[in-house]
Structures are given as structure tokens and as C-alpha cells.
Image (cartoon, rainbow, N blue to C red; front, side, top):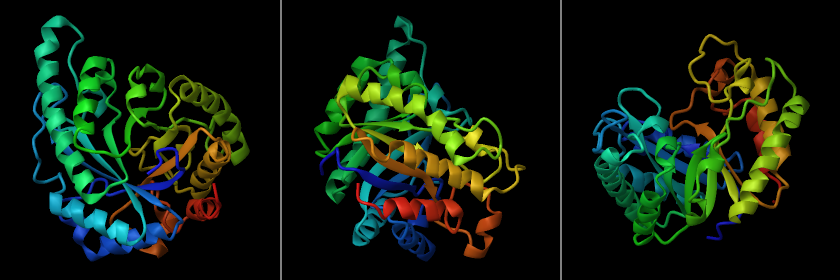
Length: 324
């Protein structure tokens, strides 16, 4: 796979219990995902470490997909003609965001860093082996792990270890606003970011207003591309269909906000217009497409990230039907 090929993608598989990928509703969801014009999925799943300062990453039987689940989902995706980026993620069971996983940057903390990177490396390499065996077209080595990103030597060693197992392109998923702090982006093939930039200034902002606010973000990311010479991909990008969410597109907690298909559609349209024609831009993995979709007649009342049956799906279908 040419790592510079444009990726018309969607995130799939998140927050599903073991066994869910093999249910009939999951296959139905994958078929509907394909109908959007998507050509890729980021198959994303997670396990827990006990807290942000733990040094061991165990297999969590309740939340980690089994290898059989992953094999089934990858094979079904490929049967539909979808390319797969395998994306294993570590979360913290104490509910603190994974960006805070880590230890102080001081000499006394080095043994803890060493132990954590050894455990994280074992976790990653298990799935890198699966990605290699199943022919996954890309592998994601981390997601929003901000506190670890200054550990350049450890990341270099980890990437070398993964490359000894998996022969395809590697991507790392930084968080929006902190992309420039990753000094080792030269070691991966694709620069990824969670592009939850707050491009609306008020609830109900239109697409043109949002587009204007993408301009400085685009300029910043272009400079990042020029520094490292790697394509930049939005490994996470999206907005809930709720009024006000384009000013906080990462939000998943404000469940009291009223439904707004327009706000979500305007966010999608603004991003696509801002980045589609940039030659250095590598594509999108929208957040997200659920393994178990709501009934179509409930789409207008849903205020989540899913776009199934909503105006944003129509926007995406129009863009993904184009040649890039």
C-alpha cells in the first residue's frame, strides 16, 4: 500500500464488547458503512491499564476484543472491499484520559517508564503480528498518548520493534493542538491527529464560518508536513449532531444539548472543503460508525457522533463519490 494514497475512511469497532464484531448487526453496520463510499476503516478497540501510573497492560476480558473477533471483522471488511488500519488503544480504568498515562520526566522515574514501554510494546506487538498475518493495510501505534510523546528514545525503540513484525505503513495518532510536540514523526509513515478543532464560535455557525476557522489549522498542518515530509491524516475527526458541538467537537458528555443535524453537516462540509484538495493531506477516519446502529427512523433524534441517516452522511457520500 502506498502510504500517500488518499484514505476515504471511517472509524469502526469502538467501545464494543467482546463478541460484538461477530453479530449479525455488526455485519449489517459494515455494509452500511461501505455504502457511504468509505474505502477504509480504522478498526479501533481498547484494553485498560489499572490507572494512569500503572506499568502493566493486561488483556481485559470484558473490554478487549478477542483475536477471533478481530480476525472476523478484518476478513468481513476485506470481503466488502474495505482496507483496514488496525488500531489497538490503551485506556485508563480510573476514567482519566489516556493522554495522562505516564510518569514524571526525572531520573528516578526511569524504571517505571522502562516497565511501561515494555508492557505497551508487548501489547502493540501482539496486534502488529495479527495485522501482518491478516494483511491489514496500516497499523496505528498509539492514540493521544501525550505524556509519553517526549520519550523519544523509547518510541524509537518501540517503532523498531513493531517494524520487525509488521511490514506495512505505521501511523501515530497525536491529539489536536499538540502535533508539533512529537519529535519522532520522522519514524512513522503517516502523521495522524485527532482533529477536533473548535471551528465554530457559536451554536449554529454556518459552514462558511467554520471553513474560515480551518485556515490557520490547515496552514499549521502544512508546515508540519513540510518539516517531516509525511502525509497527514485525520485519524479521528467528527462532531456530534447536537447544537453547539462544532465549538467542542470532542464532546460526548453534554447529552442535554438539542439535536442538530445541520451543525454536524456543516462541520463535515467545512472540513472536507478545507482539506480535500491539499496534495499533502492523506485523508479522513471519521469518528465514528457504531458496530450496532440505531434504527434509521431514530436518526434525526440521535445526538451522537454517528452520521447514519443524517444530513452529514449525505455530505460525506457526495465527497467520497469524487476522485481524489
